Image (cartoon, rainbow, N blue to C red; front, side, top):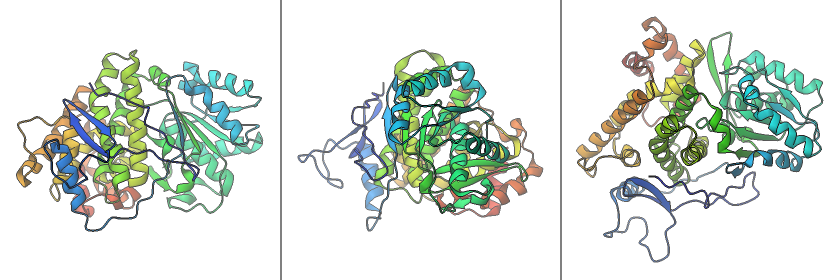
Length: 454
C-alpha cells in the first residue's frame, strides 16, 4: 500500500512563503515513497548499495542535463485535509471579501456542498452570491453570463466549488472582471495585462489540478474547439482540498478525473519544461493514482484512498502547472471541444499512443514512470533495450487501467471519425500544450496519432 503522508506538504504561494520539497523518490517494496536526503546520505550521482533502480534512473536523467536550468515554481496557498471546507470562508475574509461570488454547478448544489459553504461564509459575516450556470467543458457564453452576474451583484472575491469546469469558469469570470472584453480575446500565453480579483478554489474531483494551475480551458462554441489560456495571474490565491467532497462524485467522473491526474503526472514528467521541482510531484502523483484510483471505484466510502487521490490530483497539478503538458492534452482539447466529452476519458484513450510516440525518441525518461506504476522485476530498465521495454510496459499499463475503469478502446467509440482527423490535427498544432511535448510533432505525426487512436 502506498502511504499517503500529508504532514510534509506545506505550500505557501504568491511570494509569501516556503515550498517544502522532497529530495528523491525511491521504491520501497511495492510503493514509491518520497524522503529528504540527510547530510549522511550520498549525494545525487553517488553510488551505494541502497540505491534503487528508480534512484539510478533519476540520476541518469539528471546527469544528462549538462547545466542546471532556471526553475520557477508557481504555487497558491494550500490547505489540505478532510473537513477543510470551512477554511474557504476564513481564506475569503483574509483576501478582503464582503460579497464573494461562489461559482458551482447544479450537481454540486444537489449534493449539498454549496449550502454548507454558504453557511460557513455567513458565519464569517459574508453575503455570497451563488452562480451555478456552468456545464461540463465551460462555454464562452457561460463565462460571459457569469461575468455579467458578478458585476450586477457587486461581488469581490471569487470562490469556486466544483471540478475543473467550475474552476475554469471561475477563472474566466475573474479574468473578465479585471480585464474586460471576451474570454476568447485571451487565448494563448500571458494575454491579460491587468490584475484580477482574488480567487479561492475548492475542488470536488480528484484529477483536474485546476485549483493550483495557471491554466484556464474554455470551449469556443463558434469553432467547436477548446482554447487554452495560460498565465501566472491565473494561479489561484488559495486552494482548499477537502477529500470529503470527493465522495459525491459519480463513478464515471471519478474515473475520468483520476485518469486526468495520471496524464498530468506523466506529461509533466517528460515535458521539455520539467525541472527537479516538478519531477518529484509528478512521480508521486503517478504512484498515488496507480495505487488508489481503482480502490476508490471499488470502495468509494473508504477515506484513505480518497485522501490519496486528492493528494494525487494536487501533486499532479503542482507538476503540470509548472512543467506544462504535452501532445495528449493538445489533442484531447480538440476532441473535447468537438464532441463535448469528458476530458479525462479522452486522455485515457490517447495517452498510450502518445507514450509510444514520445518513447520512440527517448525511452529512458519513462523508466521512473514505469517504476512508479509498479514495473515488474523481470524487466531490467538500465539498458537502452530495457528502457524501451519499460516504456512499452507503461503504455500497456495505462491501457490496462483504462480498461479496468471502462474507458472506450478508441476514439471511434465516442464519435470521432476519420473525416475529423485533419481538422483535429490542425487545431492541435495551435494548442500551447504541444510546445512542451518532448518530441516534436508536425501535422502528419498528429494525424497518425489520431488514426492510431481511432
